[in-house]
Length: 267
Length: 251
Ligand SMILES: Nc1ncnc2c1ncn2[C@@H]1O[C@H](COP(=O)(O)OP(=O)(O)OP(=O)(O)O)[C@@H](O)[C@H]1O
Ligand SMILES: [Mg+2]
Image 1 (cartoon, rainbow over the protein chains, first blue to last red):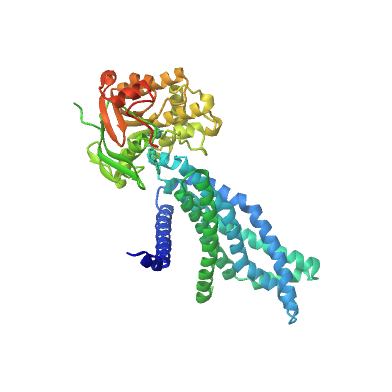
Image 2 (cartoon, chains in turn green, orange):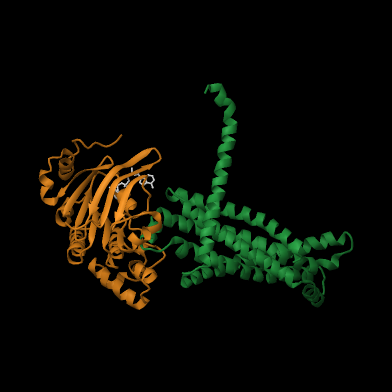
């Protein structure tokens, strides 16, 4: 091969190599997720580990999720009021706030906040275990990391994220309510009645389904990047970053896919 | 001659372009204590990680109790094996006693109270008091962590035990107690032991046989009685700890 050839071929080779790299990464992530999800639904499940992770992932995320929800609900009410007043539709504030929070903003924002808080935490923890040979030690003690470490985290995140989102729904609606009643002169009873009459089970359930999927994504990305990390503290930091970015992108992408499925089936 | 419990033949392992093991042959029988010596970075730790299936060798055979070890049946060897990691590798989210009793709790399904009693008994063997049991590994000194790792490796009375530098970082008295403990595992309980150490006093005390790893191969193997008349310049240099000789640092 002459040097001219290689100069011409170089961009193609680069494109080819990064495409192959991306495909290999998708393959690895899929295999890993399949393995771990399999371990989530077959014995043995370490119940005490699951409970411990529920507390760590779920309970300690309540403040973050609650604060996010109240501010988003409040800002949403203001925006809808401003937008609605352009065609005399201010009275729809309660309806749109509850719809936006339950179907979209509650699950997506809780998911993104937890991608930062939980995915990074899991990746750093598992990554540190990887580089200090604790994962190897688990193997020599006949404990499978996917059962002892990964499945409990994935189960805990999948179960607790919907619960968090339910709380976020309530707090988000309250945020809108406070602004509407406090500064937009809404009647408090009418606001609550409108909200309650308007919201459907489908609105809430579709948001909770999203939350469960996002929970699984968050824990899986954290475990996957942590498991793959190598090379000391720098490697652990890189794993945490990759986990957050990966989880956030996957959450937004799957949010679109799930929404279009819900629209099609009329949920 | 008893059939070997662990037998490695022609094991090769490279990391990228760096070839670490180039045909390692090793075997150890029940009731036998084998010590691996060799310069720092020659692949001693890699050798025992290959034996346990923690690293997969590029070539070569590993037999445990007559069966070929593959990734799918590596669990079988691990259930009967204990391992002390060079860096301890204690689970820092668990207490000391939960670390020691891990195999009892999560593999053998022993009740917590009973497992804790056994953990405290085993900690006493490595000269750690019951007061250490409820601490976290991060609250222990380096030498104490090593001994907790040792206790974790032997608690389930395994048939084969790997000790990666068991006495490094210990004072001479504790080091001697650890040597006695290794001997007890082998002589009283009939386990096969593979120990990596740089401590020549420890080598002379615990070894039945010694194998020297150099440039990816076992270049000398013999009983402890022949250590001083091996006739191998590498072994002699190592035993006497001389900087000049055939073993030179790779630059
Ligand atoms: N996971 C790994 N990735 C890349 N290289 C590795 C890995 N593990 C070990 N090595 C390399 O293999 C060589 C042998 O390492 P090993 O840990 O087995 O040395 P050792 O004989 O145990 O040394 P020491 O006595 O210092 O513990 C080293 O040069 C190391 O750089
Ligand atoms: Mg080593």
